Length: 158
Image (cartoon, rainbow, N blue to C red; front, side):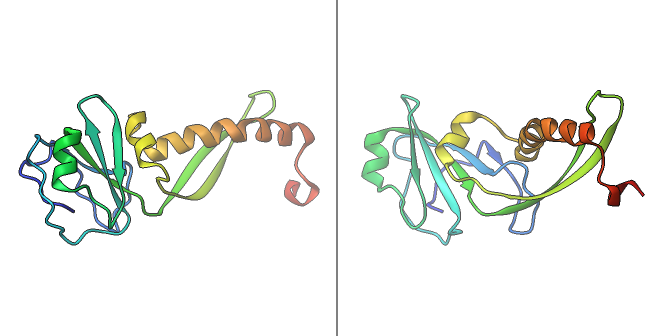
C-alpha cells in the first residue's frame, strides 16, 4: 500500500486466514499533500477507494495507484482499503413451512468477494454475512414454502 502520514481512523486487524465480516480493512483521512507514492508491497486483491471533497469515489486496484499530483489535484479527503479476495462463509438459516406452523434448519456454504469496491464503500454496508443471510433467506423463503406444500419426497419421509 502507498504510504500515508496519518494513522487510520479505523483499522481491522485481519490477515489472510481471518474470517472477514467487513472487507473494509482500513479507513484513513488524508490531507491534500499527505499522500506519497512510495510503493510498498501490497496484496494483489486489495483496492484503494479514494473519496474526494465532493463525495465522488475513485478506485485503484493493484498495481495502479494515483500519482502524488493526481492525489493533490483531485483533493482526496479519505481512502478505504478494501479486500477483494474470496472469503468462505457458512450460514445457518431457519426456513418457514407453508403455513408457518413449523420451521426447519438449513445450512449454506458460500464464498463471497467484493466485485465493485466503489459500490460497496458507498453502500455503507459493513456486515457481509448478515447481508448474505438476509438476501438468501428472502430468496429461499418461497422455495421452502413450496416444498413444504408438496410434502417431502418418499426417501426423506422414512
